[in-house]
Image (cartoon, rainbow, N blue to C red):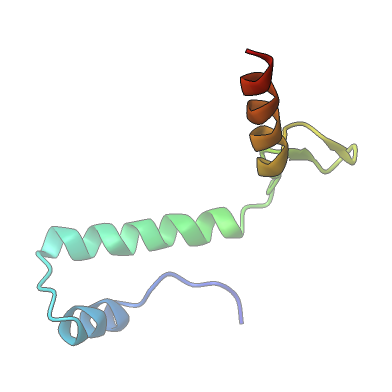
Length: 77
């Protein structure tokens, strides 16, 4: 089974169970956000923005590298 947007029944159930009333536009936005998320998950050209999977080379930095660079910069100052 593939990815699917949240069904209206789940949005309604969440609203009722958490006692969080939703305006119609809020429920629609939750559904649209869910649809957009699923669309991105199943995009044909799904390439991570931090890696070039075609060349197998990294294009960005990891969080650990970013933090390490910030620490090195602070000690140099």
